Image (cartoon, rainbow, N blue to C red; front, side):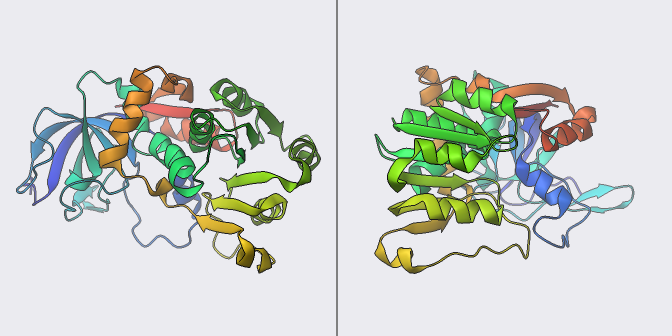
Length: 323
């Protein structure tokens, strides 16, 4: 049945990013996945081919960002795909497929001349990274921040912190190639946690526990606990990385009664319908260069190698799939 349901949008996908969330899905980080087999991908750029009943925010021919956070419009029923004679599950957005049926509230129109490689990153990497800095960390001018984990989303936190005029921006990661990009994007200090005593180096930069914000992208309990310990008495700890199920953190909660905070982030609490246009303007005004985030462009048949390269650190920034 090729008929679109209310709120559904048929698109031709041009480009897609690969997010750490997909690696988490592949490795089962969140536990049992009852929807297997299913399509994947949640950040992309596409052209609208057709719209279902009730769709008002996009029309045929529009260039759109595909995103996992809810934006304007209808949340449709999820589409039904078939593969090898059996049902193939999908959510409200998928981007690892050349054509897709997307929920209207996962599509945001952008100018037709927008670079399609960069546009894909507004589906998650940029909006999440910037949203964490703006909405979760609420970083202010002159404050200090540690960003632990400088992958695709962490690198966007670095450049958002730079745009926020943070005084100290420490990027920590296990891979030097990621840290090199972090430095170009605005990190004042970079620390490789795999071949150095990262705690000693951090504490030589952050003296007297004056750390304002600690952001964890790793989901590793030991690192979360360390960030909680070294942040100031009124410091903010933001958890972006998701620990594997059963990996709990252990903290002394008393400081929470006196101003210290610890919060979880859900996509940086970004609102795609408002934030994508704002963040596009930052690039248009050349306040930052989003192209620095892209390490590789691949075809869809190279995706397994690209995912393996992300997992072992050979890829520094975002990988863009050309569909």
